[in-house]
Image 1 (cartoon, rainbow, N blue to C red):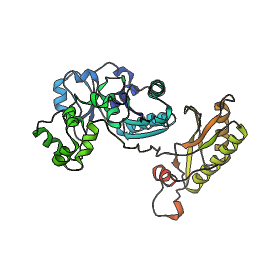
Image 2 (cartoon, rainbow, N blue to C red; image 1 turned 30 degrees about the vertical axis):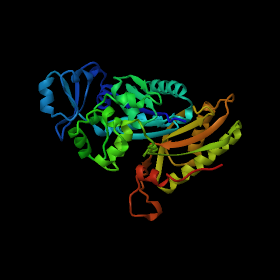
Image 3 (cartoon, rainbow, N blue to C red; image 1 turned 135 degrees about the vertical axis):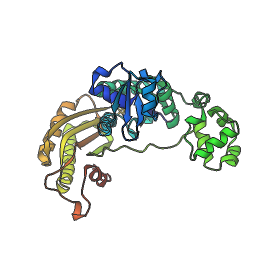
Length: 369
């Protein structure tokens, strides 16, 4: 069965984040800059008509568009926005990869055939826009690279599906500058040989590519032909801990589900207490046989007391549970982790524990039933 890899990218991510903070910027020419490097980080579509682009010197950008509003970038705030975006996706998709602060991949292969995946992806996009306020472009194909290209070149807030077998034709007109090469010298060597388009590269034989670029050059040739077997790198929220159970047979028993949920809460709460952490968010997720998911989350005072967190999880479950549906998966997440006032260390180790390395230490923990 063909893979279905979805690529999502918030449009002009840094500019969109600034517009969410200050709605009066909507529709205006906006440039977000790196003050230290004096370079453009991002610019609105209103600026691009003047030739402004990322990495341009700020002075040059100001000359091209003196009317533009220039805003110093705030990477910490952008990272929080990115985590919010990732959180919405992580609650919805089977497998998520966060490739960059504004680049996300989701493997929808298990959802069904391509029409089903595309319908599901468009509904997901609507949910993302509704919950984050971010404009989103997306592409779907069997390849990470093809999906990224589809999202990048389809236009702001647009979407494009490249069906299996059409990848090579879609990529052919683009410049080889779009391709990721293992070594930059490979790109320049191809240009010297007159190979300037992805279609030209794809038309070469694997043997000729290997003689010209070596074994690593075949990676670029495969990408040019829309061939990609690269697996996604699963995303994990660095400021949360979670666990989930997938049943071999669908569960119709709410009492059993609550019992499992309580065990999950006990396990995660024990880890919080042991490592001197508190949680301020509880999230419960239910997955169904058709691979759709439903999520409910709620804030709580910073606590580590298991029965308090378990009680909130039970409340969310009762709101979420639908008696007419069988359950394939149940998950629990404690988020917004922070160190308690009295700092603790794991197993008296020398390194200070943080939400990030705490979740790393719990990454291999699981609950089995």
